[in-house]
Length: 288
Picture: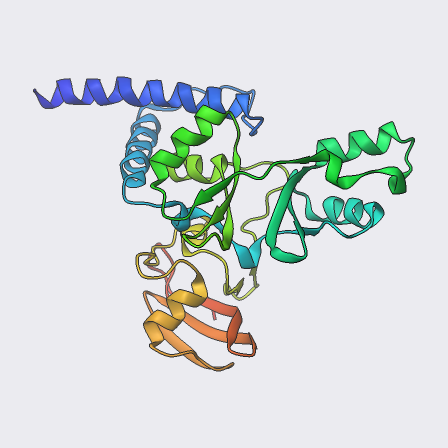
């Protein structure tokens, strides 16, 4: 097959995938813009190239590589009174939140904000009359070792986009959404509630204060960094892997074009890291 023929085939495949992804996003209520713009030819080529890279990259990933780690999950204690639960849902900004009973690892269901506020309206605004257990959806548990393409297919078959991730022993590991997988293909899906990156605060001097549990892949995707994510999932894991130790607060390390400073710990767990680019992406010196 000639190069021109191969390009034509890939172009048609990517166009079909793009239509399927758009339809899937709309079906599941994940925001897509109503405004259609026609990209310039070079932009279309780059978009298709990036999308193809994302599709091919799925083959090497498992659910554990893109899930939200359990330390960063928002959870609700099912024994809390309904008024407290409503306040937590409003504060979280999430539409679906796992609910536990007895201990946080024991997920008994998933609370959908829509069902919660429908119940509140049904009871005339009386939160105390709501039976939380009666409006929970059954949790869907998936293994952390499942290949990402298989999980994508499972989401589409079930026509849902939220799952609880467990390990081989049934222990809670995190959660994964269809949006997490699609972002691996097409890049960030932004809506009006998205922060620049959850758990990241940019400082005026060009550095970043990052929650240690933030996945390396999220940082790379949000800021176009190229930190390695093969050996560690989270930023703390990357620092520990590269340092070959559990650093103390105040210790700094330079690697992969960044300076990493441990700023907070809880016992032996790193909780916050200051990340300073040693040079900009364009090669200019970093500020400060």
